[in-house]
Image (cartoon, rainbow, N blue to C red; front, side, top):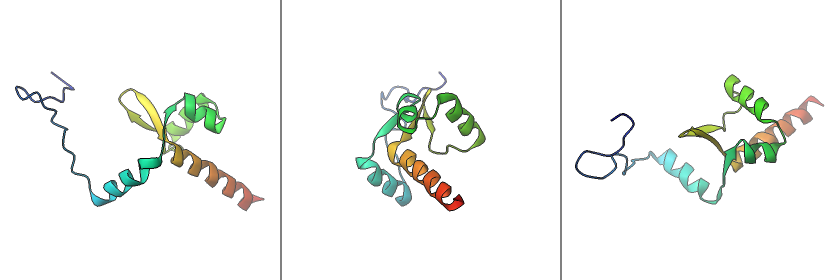
Length: 95
């Protein structure tokens, strides 16, 4: 059976215990007050940038905050806000 996470006979998930590195553990702790946004609905609403543009940007590697879980795309709100702030700072530097 492809894609199954259960171990035969035990009924327990083979991914039930994750050994995270200290860096990953710090990221998880930092995300405790963050919010996971769905794509396209919440990301498009927050940024006011169309879904097709985000898909193009992701394809080109210009939207690193979008990530896949299962069949859906998500983004951490703090990452999207940081991207918006970077765009603002870049625009001010060009002016």
